[in-house]
Amino acid sequence: MFHHLPPAVIDPILSVAEAFQHDSRPNKLDLSIGVYRDTLGHTPIMRAVKTAAIALASEQRTKSYLGPAGNLQFNAAITRLMLGQAAPTDQWVTVQTPGASGGLRLLADLIAASRPHATVWISNPSYANHAPIMQAAGLTVRHYPYLDAEMRSLDRAAFFDHVRQLGLDDVLLVHGSCHNPSGVDLEPADWQMLAGLASRQGFVPFIDMAYQGFGDGLEADAGGLRIMDQACEQLLAVYSCSKHFGLYRERTGAALVKGRQPSLIRHKLFELARRQYTMPPDHGAEIVARILTDAALRQDWEVELAAMRQRILQTRHALVNALAKYDMNARHLLAHRGMFSMLPLSEPTLEALRAQAAIYLIKGGRINLAGLPVDQTDRLAQAIAAHSPG
Ligand code: PLP
Ligand code: TYF
Image 1 (cartoon, helix red, strand yellow):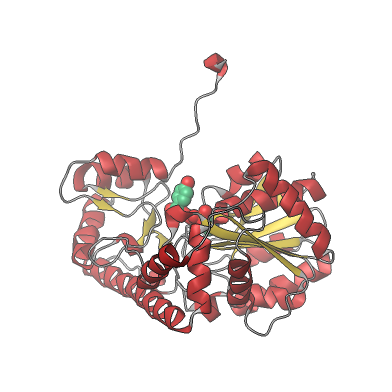
Image 2 (spheres, rainbow, N blue to C red; image 1 turned 90 degrees about the vertical axis):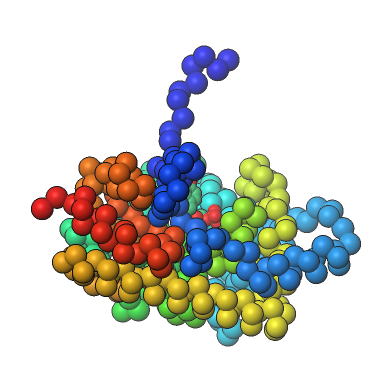
């Protein structure tokens, strides 16, 4: 049966993380996969998550099935966290999914069921799994221009020229904040412009929020989505709790749809979930629901999240200062948000960093700044200077 199985497509990020694990050099430095690390290089379980998990273990009375929408308290709390306390939610449907990845596939199936010939537009570049997940649902994927040639900032003219061409058969997938891989985000005025174009032209915006609170704060990072919500009758969104709750392996996320027929949409999502995974895993979602609905836990989580955000910003400053010592101007990194930025490093430079300095970045030059311990900043800058041509 498996003689004709085509070889697997290698994940460009997970494969680097794997190579890193097999590297036995003691000074190795992993700046590849997007996980948050503290100053010591650990990815901690957040305090509020630990507390909620302990309470859950002693208080939970059953592990019986929940329905295809998953944990309803989680869905309500996440919807509020995204849209804000006062926003009307009657046009929104929220279902819990196995991570944002599960949500991406669920909404891809929904798009395919509603408009099989739709084109999903993703930023060039974008999160490595966006295209494969959309394509797996049978959708056509194409790229829209996003970054300028130096990968430093938004190519606003090219982006909006492109968006002005979109119509009823188009879905525009945008990152809510902390763009992966570039750290280059839309500004409030860009979101306003985008919202106006979407409501006039009828394309459907699809917002991927995987880093709420890692950029400028929980409220600010949801600002783009909220601007779109005010202007657009139809929206798609996915949400991840992997990073800002540190729940990666618990596969905790959500898919949200705004539309005029919420009941129809809800039941279609249930059907689509049923034929994929039936019901999402509850553990992470129950932890998040407890944190968001308990004042003390929520406060503690927000404090710890703010410290994580500060650490990423400090790392940005430290790296810019360290690179300046070697005559490299990287001040634009200070305008980027979230864990990632792209460094303009050639493939031979990236290869030399890996082979000679045991420093792992991924193809294209994306760096996970949250993976950089403070005491390694100078070593990284020195290695980049040593292995860059000219
Ligand atoms: N979307 C973006 C933009 C991401 O960077 C990630 C990274 O993990 C995901 C989705 C997937 O998140 P999850 O772990 O919730 O599936
Ligand atoms: O972009 C990243 O590094 C994260 C984590 O197949 C990730 O989003 C990487 C690869 C992958 C799934 C998640």
